[in-house]
Amino acid sequence: MTRSTCAVNGVAYGACAWDMPFVRAGESVDPPSLALPTVPAAATLAYTVTLHARDRSGVLWRYEGTSDVRRPFAARKRVGGGWNAYTTVTPLRSTTAGGEGDLVARDRNGVLWYYRGTGDPGAPFAPRERVGGGWNTYDLLF
Image (cartoon, rainbow, N blue to C red; front, side, top):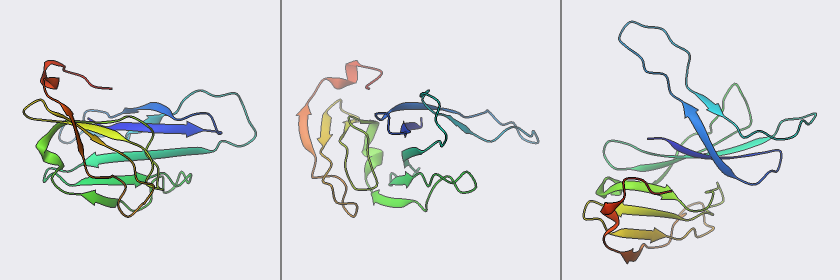
């Protein structure tokens, strides 16, 4: 699952959804697109997007929007490995290129862990803190 937060024309960050078309072998479809929040009309559209993605080996990557439609994301930045220990990773506050924003992660045993944003882009999260067990009761965290 892909989760993103977006800000448009200075409006507060919020969730924004991706349209990820299903592709069958040999078919041609539109590329994925991002549904930006609706804001009042302005002469210029300015947006900020931060995307976190976990690869198959458990490495968490951060992608920052560039505001350039020809190259929507800057080169990915490695957050760290070991994130495949979690069944769910959910932002609590919008994460930024400046290393700000918090998130929680639930491990396979149902323990919820809190990661505080540090404000340091090179190490965006402080060491995890245990929130508690029993979170595997829930099928969705947001």
